[in-house]
Image 1: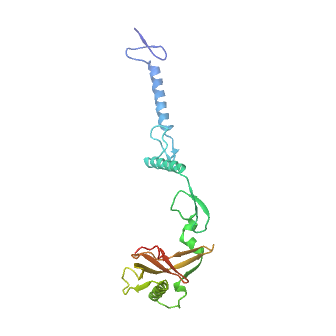
Image 2 (image 1 turned 180 degrees about the vertical axis):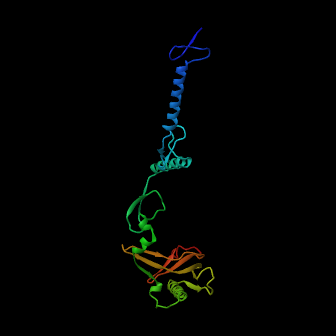
Image 3 (image 1 turned 90 degrees about the horizontal axis):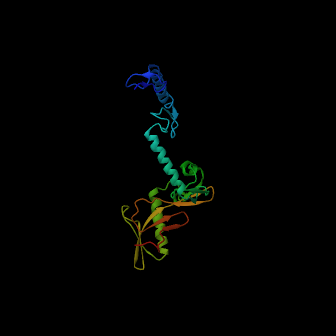
Length: 233
């Protein structure tokens, strides 16, 4: 049986499928297909994550320039899905008082300007502490001793028996005793920060606390934290 070319029906030899001319044409078509597959499919394209141009390895389905970009894009999509499932909480800015929505339960400020220290400092109108009412030149240790004596006098007026520490390395500054209950107190000089919007904030140093309660001495009052009736011995 005579074999014929599968393209032009020309008789061919045994074991052949194409005549010489059709075989040359098939090789040229195969070369053109390979050239298009490498040069056209592998044309530079932007990365779907970082937008950097890159050349795909094999096919045009490649979207990312590297495995790192692929992982980062997947993480970003996961975070977006998580944010879509969560419900934001409405809070009030601790600096300007504006209302804002947030997913972070610990966020206190509505913007970076309110959160940064220079922005907060510009909104401060006045700082008031015990040091502002004592004469200029009084040593800080003397101001601390004044604060302890003021707390002792206040406790005596409240009906407590008061005992003062003899060494600054003691675990507390004062001991208040009344009705069989003894409480240790750490005396700190507090500061009142008054902001431009009229809001006030009382703060004091809270490190190395080993007593039952704080006695915060302000220019016009003494604040116990917690209150003496709530403090546990």
